Length: 226
Image (cartoon, one colour):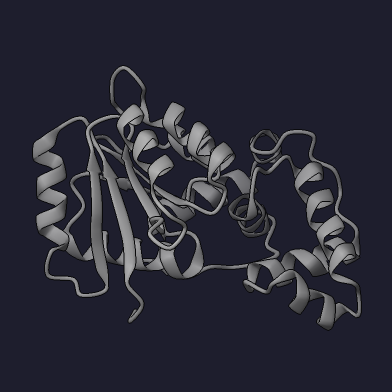
């Protein structure tokens, strides 16, 4: 990718922060703009910066004190809807994937990942809004093949209409409301209503949730790192 990806790092271990920054230092298209050792620090920082300087991605450790990564993500998703989030963890746990999806996180990355995986994850999240490894995809398929687990990912899940499925497919193609309106011969306001209705029906929090719902239900497919 040629566009510069602005990244912020949050981890309560300074050595981890410095290590990730050094790992990415040679990447001309990725800049580490800020490092924080806790949730309160990054929240205070984000309140002070302009829209032009706002990061594209926050890479956040799960196991932090006193505010853990998931609590921080909930606050960030509530206050900064467009901020993409990559969760870091020392231990890859399959049970985290479902919770990650519900929070609208874009990727889950083990801390022992190699440099290539770190860079791929950051670039894929910046470009497509999410990043799945082969293991992630296998877990998604297991959700898809087990109706009770699939349904548990999304609260108050209802059947989508054919028109709503059309909108979902175009959302997955990263079309704007205006572009969707032009393709489906609708007004942008009607498209926005459809988008909100879709979120309400499936219980997703944001566009990432819509895309993951589409993947689970075979409405859309995304590139998978094998």
